[in-house]
Length: 185
Image 1 (cartoon, rainbow, N blue to C red):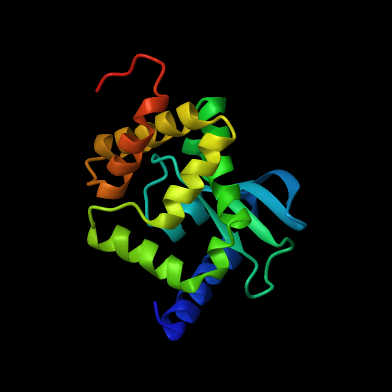
Image 2 (cartoon, rainbow, N blue to C red):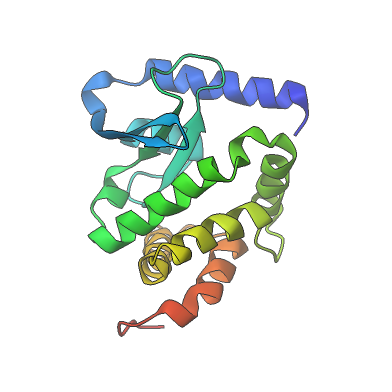
């Protein structure tokens, strides 16, 4: 992603956030990660707009305060579909998102561009950034929760008739060893 495209993307992202209806937003908590303030927010509009998904698909993402428009250093946005998942799945997804902050992923524009390319072109590969964040969730004891959260995402995409990217399947496959509950394959 070029610097110009990154600036355009960040401008579009912040425009979505500034246009979001505060009535739709529910701040869940604020906490600290490596000396950075992080806010956890449930907001279907922002998640759907930024990730270009329908609200019924459980999703989350972390956003840095790059342009100084947030009242925190980072904000983790989740939608209501994700927030409705079992607690172990939510915890695993949040551990994954926090790992992006801990690993400095959001400051590394080259790694972000590679990750986006992997997703956009459906390459048969998991980006190193996503693999590291998944491993961090596993290291915190949430491998099973992450496995089932990714399955929930894939199942919701199938239910909506949407194609899912190869990366999700590869991530599920890499976490299969953490599957403990009976789950229809």
